[in-house]
Amino acid sequence: MFALIALAIIMGATAQRVSGLGFALTVAPFLVLLIGPFDGVLMVNLAAAVSAAFVMTRLWRNIDWRQFVSLTIPALIAVVPGAYISVLLGGPELQIAVGLILVVALSTSLLVSSAQKTVPQIPAALLSGTASGFMSATAGAGGPGVAVYSVLTRWEHRSFAATIQPFFVSLGVTSFVTKILLSEQGLPDYEWWVWPLIISCTLVGLTLGEWVSRFVSVRVARISVIAISYVGGLAAIVDGLFDALG
Image 1 (spheres, rainbow, N blue to C red):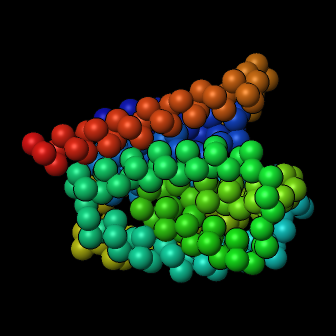
Image 2 (cartoon, rainbow, N blue to C red; image 1 turned 90 degrees about the vertical axis):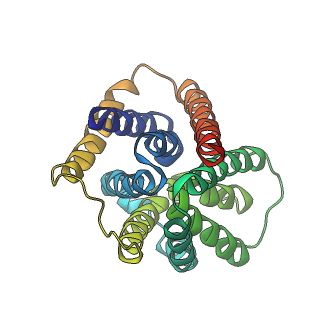
């Protein structure tokens, strides 16, 4: 099983590096199917934070710290109810919720990507940050919320790509720690080497992505990732429904 987990994380990190799309959208549904919704999203939170921290070191000069603060404050507040719901639900109900959140979030970001209307930054940051924090804690996917914000506020792409890296680090770490503190079981009962394995696989995937990006276009990679994300999200929903009804 852990070989499949490692493979999923490596593939997700590789896709993230090549396409620029969310790591969680690719990996979360499959980890949910492999080890359950709570543990699966918990691993995604950790791996996403590691991935963003690695990328952040390269984009440090372009980070807009003012935008970072305006998005991160509401996001971190929203992590708490999101983490509580993920702990409270558990089982197939949480799995269905994770699948629905991933599918709806991805669909929303795709629909808004062609929007022409510009909205004020402060209310948009409040709503998008809150949505991202909640989705990060429940489904591991904080990306679509800030992607919508970048489109609606016409945020310059280079600054956006750099600024969301410390944002994802903050969300991933906070979601991970908050859910462990709220859960009665605490840290999942895996062998000690599982957590270093997750971090190592993330770094391997990012390194592999550097090489793959020379041969695969961003457009092809993004289309592939979107398709995989939809399939994984729908599979998580269907599997959760069977568990709930069975």
